[in-house]
Length: 261
Image 1 (cartoon, helix red, strand yellow):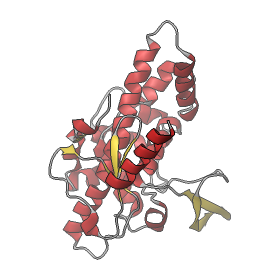
Image 2 (cartoon, one colour; image 1 turned 120 degrees about the horizontal axis):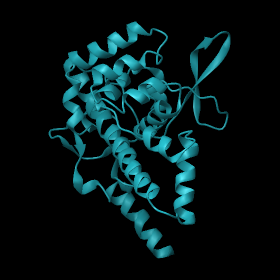
Image 3 (cartoon, one colour; image 1 turned 180 degrees about the horizontal axis):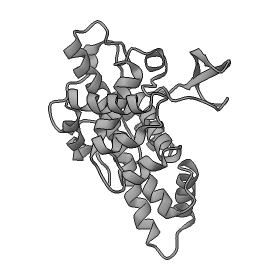
Image 4 (tube, one colour; image 1 turned 135 degrees about the horizontal axis):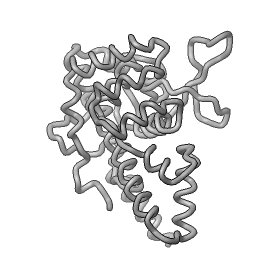
């Protein structure tokens, strides 16, 4: 067993490849925009960049392209993981009796997603369009210029309320109190946290709507509580998706050879 573990770790160090539960990701270090691998096909190689970098030195059109190419693989990894986890939960929900390992798996997910029943868990693991994720990441991080994006791999500005979490202090305060933002080891971790936040936080109308439609423009209406700007924020999301033709990314997928079933 020890030799097998050593061989696995060696493989990761040599190839940069590691497995999440469902997707064989390729961790890639990044120091300049040239390190970002261009996306030329709707079947995307699951590069997960170990850190975010500034793109400010690039012309506007190239900056936008590089920002999406930096984020999209990690988004698709997290989305694929969530989708396949949902399929597994559905399969397990049909079994008359679960093993101890299966029950532990379900219980862990129910706690993470704050689901009271398995059916609620299945609903909370439902997918929604990638175009919304890309738009929110770009808007919340100011096209990757925010400090919490560059220093904490946190494109969505997710807050931290837990002293035990990795986090950084925000430059602003809220009602005289310090604000902290979560710090992630890579971009994929932050996107997973974003999905959990929308699935378990105060966005019940959004969760209900995504059970009935996959239209990103209709779903944006139900993100009114995501920002204090409310209607103005919803309008910006819709305009952003339209202006940057983000709907095209809704059909992009992780290349099948990297998906473990």
